[in-house]
Length: 68
Image: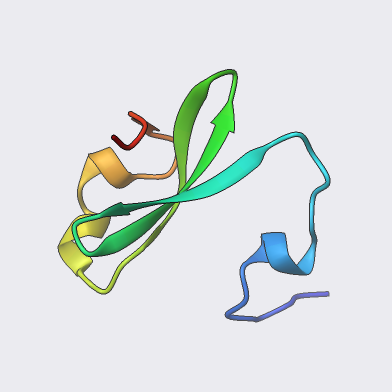
């Protein structure tokens, strides 16, 4: 079965894991980040600026510093 949806898979198939999600504002956009082992990792970028999606600092899996 193939599911075509605009809803992210984590909302359709929730994972009850130990991950802690939060949002960080950056360049008039939002970064959904995951905290694990004391570090923040980019999970998803929410932006209307296509240039930010090409920036490796905001790629999923990239490490980011906590917001000040």
